[in-house]
Image (cartoon, one colour):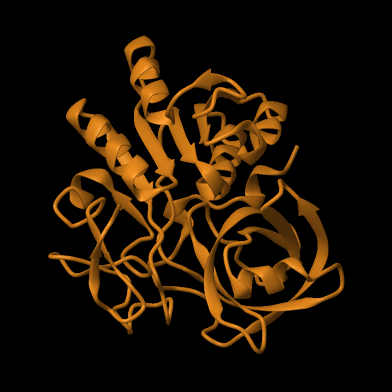
Length: 284
């Protein structure tokens, strides 16, 4: 079992924008793991003195391609893990990389999950389970209790279920086609779970419409909800404004990416976002 000192909690982060360097840090790939047909995990050499905390992210760059934000799905002595879904030209090129190749990192950036407490409900959809599995490890290693609800369209798209169960974390699955676990949406599973057990906090990451429902339900019940958002980012540290949440002007990269649910409900979270040009578009 990993030493507890290898995972930082949010209160150990000295200031929300304190990180070791703005410049790129070369990171050699130690190994890769095919998580499913679309997602590949990269274990990267990481020798900085401070490890990222669950919920933080790096800006990841491969020369000749875009720089993209990536959440950390695991970290420990001498390594971090990022899990990348093949969604376009840049991520497709990432998937062609192998052991010994290099990526370049900036960060870690942003605010992670606040993990003080004893009982957590984790609600993840698709590859949104990546930062949550890291949070689950931190909770487990500190003696906390958590239940992890996994959602996906079909069984073959599920991520990190076996990893969570190996840690002894109670894990429940919902798939839209019923190919694994309960048939239906993970938000329906959450409604059922909250009728049976009490939790101090809910952590969620996944498609934004899914997270909106998780936040809405949790806040209505008086439970603290933390949601990890994904937005288009250019800089990663609050300068460009590409990831802003209107009308409060919150920047996902520096004020988040993890936000308190009650605050999110005062923004356009779950309703609109900005595309590459900066134009506001409705979420489907």
